[in-house]
Amino acid sequence: MEGSNSQSTNYCINFQNVQEAAKRIQNLAHETPILTSSSIDSLLQCENKEMKLFFKVEALQKTGSFKFRGALNATKALQESVLADETTTNSSIHVVTHSSGNHAQALALSARMGSLSSTNNIHNSSQIQATIVMPRSAPTIKQNAVRSYGAKVILCDNTNEARKQKTSQIMQEYRSHFPSTKTAFIHPSEDPLVIAGQGTVSLEMISQVSKMTNNIASLDIVVIPVGGGGLASGNTITLRALLGPKVKIILAEPETLNDAKRSKESGQLLLHDPQNPLQSVADGLKTTLGPNTWPIVRDLVDDIITVSELDILKATKLIWERLKIGIEPSAGVGVAVVLGDEFAEKYGKLQSHNNNVGVILCGGNVDFIKVTKLMQEMDL
Image 1 (cartoon, rainbow, N blue to C red):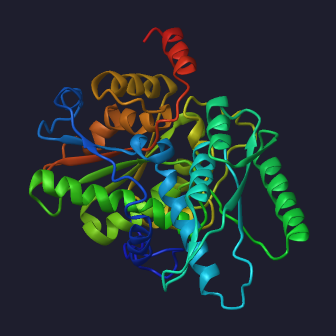
Image 2 (image 1 turned 90 degrees about the vertical axis):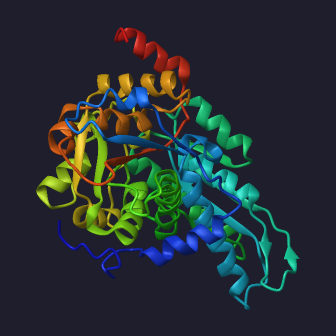
């Protein structure tokens, strides 16, 4: 593993940025629970029978996913910058992004919750407007949730190019018509403030598991779903800072959306194959790594394991049944990895003091009817 120093200036964030994010979102974002299940532990294919799973349930975060952490951190930091600018006469803010759902909901709620206040406690109320570009294929449940938080939804074609073009158009038009308003684009996974906010998941998880196990060095392995890489890179920075090279960091990815694995194996940032139809039940992981997230994944992540659509659905159903948590299939990807043969072969023989495995259940925004039908079609 190259470049084990997580504080390297080559990366877009460092651990101090994560700590700052934790202070910004404290008492606003939920501290999500850690759940365990002896029955799921018994399904591990590992020779090391002492291995225990700790599920970090971000499906119970506000808006139903970890995305709220990063969106809230970015929004509040933007507020701080506006207040710090003594030349600003207009405190209005307009945030814009493109997202298939989870980041869209997160930014919409962050904007609704946002209000400007100065350091001397003089409250300056100002609604933060949010405009979200979403693909027409985005689940209706996610589109409706974004609108319910007060954001404006603009639909576009289901391509990354269409999202970027529409977002750029909105930014230009708004800045032209409302030049005194602070208009900012908050990327779902590449914005450093978003990445730092996502890194607070492991900050909490390490503390929680430490208390549960009475051991500061509480985790031996952490499994994180990867799409755009904001969650993966932010938490990798945290894990390396607090647990060093000891912890094994494994990213989980669908076989049909394997850009991160292909990039890791080749040593260069690769996008999806142009012929890839991008069809996966884990729709939240369709985004690719970018120039900010890729270097962290390249240098500091130990491994990337991909899993089949069938295994993702099996794992999702297992969590529904055993933990009674309605995770989305994107969260099931990590569960499928730890229950799979490749994980058992590579890591199932590890003998350490704790043998503790953290699994981040990244979200719970799921169309239960649609996913249940898929499970029935596969006779699960």
